[in-house]
Length: 162
Image 1 (cartoon, helix red, strand yellow):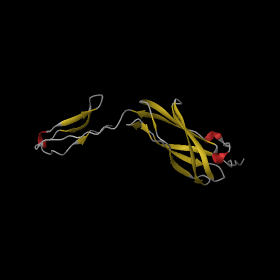
Image 2 (cartoon, rainbow, N blue to C red):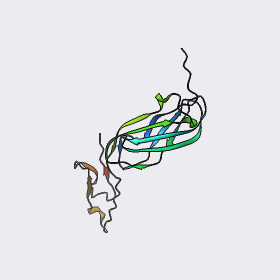
Image 3 (cartoon, rainbow, N blue to C red):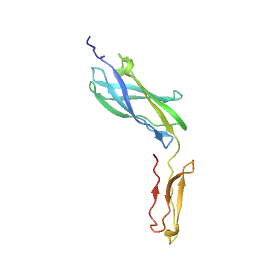
Image 4 (cartoon, helix red, strand yellow):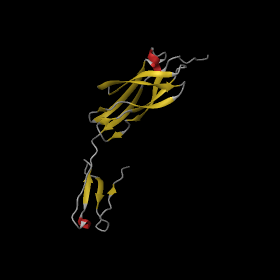
C-alpha cells in the first residue's frame, strides 16, 4: 500500500525553546515548523500554551516552505508562572484550509522548569579590592558563584552542577 501525503499538511516537529531549566519568567518560544503537504506552505496558524492554562496564544506564520522542509519559527513572548510546566504547540489551517492529516500537528515539551529571574550583581570596591571575599548561594544554600582568593582580586568562579 502506497501512502500519499496530504496536499496541505503542516506540523510542529520540535521545540528549541523553552526547554528544561528556564531562569526567567519571560518565555520566548522557538519551534520547528515542518511542511508535510505536497503544496508549498505559505501560511499556517500556530497555537501554543503552558499546561493548557496559560494562553492559548496564536501566531500566523507566513513564508515559503516546500514539501518536507522545516524552519525555526520564533513565536511572540509571554510571561509564565513559576513551576514545572508542559509547553504545548500545534498547527492549523495550512494555506488557509483544514489540515488534511491532523495527527502530526502537535508537539509537547515536557518538564519546562521556570525557576526565577536573571540577577545582575555589581560589586564596587575601595582602593584595596584584594580584601574582598564574596559568595552567592542557591536556595538550598549551596555555592553558585564565589570569590575566595585574596591573591587575585578580579578572579571569581561559578560552581558547577552535575
